[in-house]
Length: 114
Length: 114
Image (cartoon, rainbow over all chains, first blue to last red; front, side, top):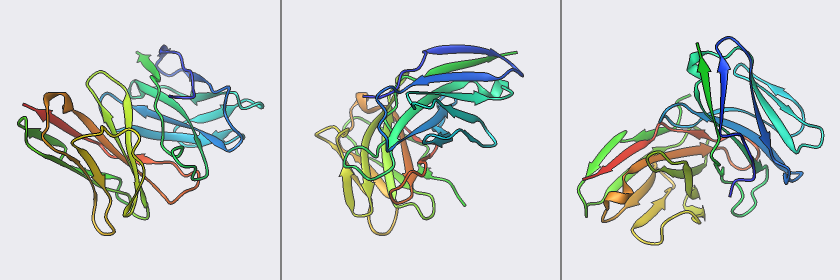
């Protein structure tokens, strides 16, 4: 079972920042937070991941709370092409038997409106 | 650096035939994961392999399904005696050996059983 909780759907206006929340209150100290998205029926696309510090790359920013129990993915200037299902996943960094796989929940269906 | 390559992209099989799905991981990646996505459903983990070794097959159906990742060549997901319920998109992901690096997905193979 997924160890994260996300809202099932969100809307955002084109050009605005999209902020996608994720709760992972049972996260362990060695678990990273990963974000993926799936556009229509394509293969999931990696976005970003982090442990405890905020992270930024060319696609998005990841803000992790100090207690690490929740995080927010930020798409700074959403475009129509960002419409997708976004998945927040926690995964340990070390090889722990049965734990290295990515477990996908239901994700958040983000719709960018023109 | 080529991404994860899956072939074929589309596969049609008659009930009772065998389906072979191939996955070539990214260069330098020694871990492969297989996922299944039924129509209008989420991504379900099937199996996690290293070269010549199955690490976690907790998501594999007990019968008709098998997977391998030989020392040389792609990873193969094999479905024997396919049934209509096997119709789905099958995605493969790869990651480097251990550590927190992200896993990257291929574009999937869409299996249709007629």
